[in-house]
Amino acid sequence: MTISEETIKDWIVDEGIFREKKLEDNADFHYIVEFPKDNIMDVVRPKGKDFILIACATQVSPQHLELMNTSSPKERSEFLLDVNMSLNQFLVDVQLAVDQSTNLLQQYVITYQIFDDGLSKNSLYDALKRVFKAKIQCVWIIERTFGTVNTNISEPSNENSMFI
Image (cartoon, rainbow, N blue to C red):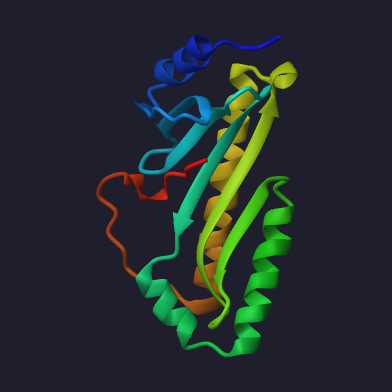
């Protein structure tokens, strides 16, 4: 049984996380949500598919890239292995964009799909939590490995929006 777009929109509007609807040719619907506060994610039903995709794309900050750049090649390789192994425990899909010449992580996209037969408001919110926790785990690994930086985040940014 397919859950309607209207039902999913109602779920995200009711909980106050709806931010905007994006119109895309390759999606039946694509919503931008803010969950939790100041974190932007996407809720997408790819065109003609029987699942929704929860996604969060994150750019590594220039400050973190500077810290990473001062590390040794061995530290960078160990860091990437640590990220892969840690995020694997969240049972999410992860795509790491690594600069091949420097072996520096530039961006990462975390996704989780829910097939229609398992889709409920509860499973949607569990997926949003899972994706966010995986995202923040990567941030913590970056900071544990390379150090912390002061960043002032005053409002949500669409820069981490994922495009299918």
